[in-house]
Image (cartoon, rainbow, N blue to C red):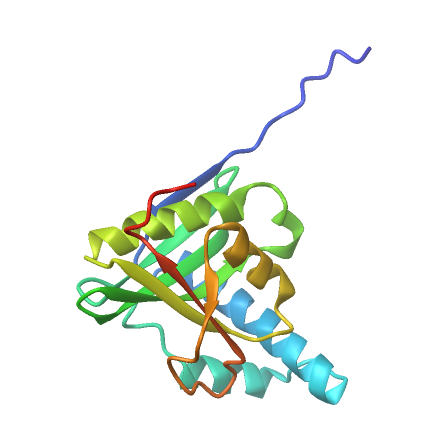
Amino acid sequence: MSTATRTHQTWTIAPAPVGSADALALLRAYFVEVSDRYYRLHEGRDSTPAEIEDGLAAAPSDDLAAPTGAFLIGTYGGEPAACAGLRVLDARTAELCRVFVRPDLRGTGGGRQLMAAVDEAARALGAERIVLDTRLDLVEARALYTRNGYAEIPAYNTGAYAEIWYAKDLTAPAN
């Protein structure tokens, strides 16, 4: 039997300024992943640096800050490793966006903790419901949403990349 001690890393989720260095790095990693997956699926190649920059510029995250939203960062073993954003759509609805867990850390419990923190942040914004849109090829994200109480709904927007829509009722009792 080895006498070496195994180190257990832990997740911590906390609000963060969307313009912080950690937030910007995670948002860039998110955009690179979703863009590369899109271009691989549709054109058989990765995104170009110009496409990444264009995507970041076309989808600013400035509104993911109080009073119109919130931005959360998950750290794993003290290192930034996950993020999620919320924006207020109306008096009772918040929209979830920019959900990302580093691929090498998926399956470590961070997504579940991130989603629980999203619920708390949405309630703090006064939301009774969270909605989101995503693409069909983002299967890990879709699985995360359904595991955390989201159900498919009719389209609520016409986003260029929106292919499926989900909602979660925050007033319903937890399972």
